[in-house]
Image 1 (spheres, rainbow, N blue to C red):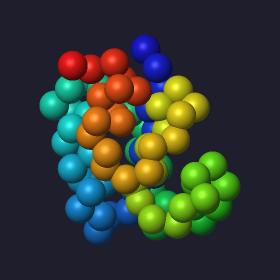
Image 2 (tube, one colour):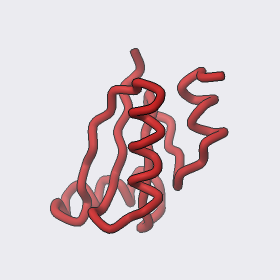
Image 3 (tube, rainbow, N blue to C red):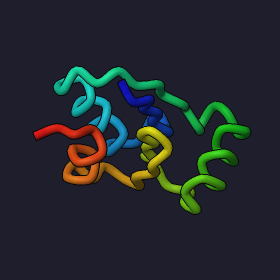
Image 4 (cartoon, helix red, strand yellow):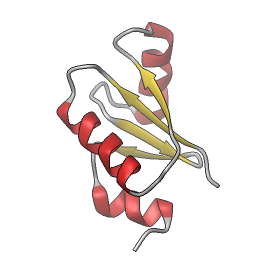
Length: 78
């Protein structure tokens, strides 16, 4: 299975929606809380060029925001 990381904050509604989407589709993911880890926040910004969350990394591909069609495509879901 492809590695999935999601960069989040506690207060982000779209982050919660993305995590619910992963749970619904039985996708195992690693959550990285950028509001608690500044080094991870810096890494996220370097990878994505974005300061907003969620930033989702699937097998090295970066998806900014909760973009369901892009997530389904990257995860090969119908």
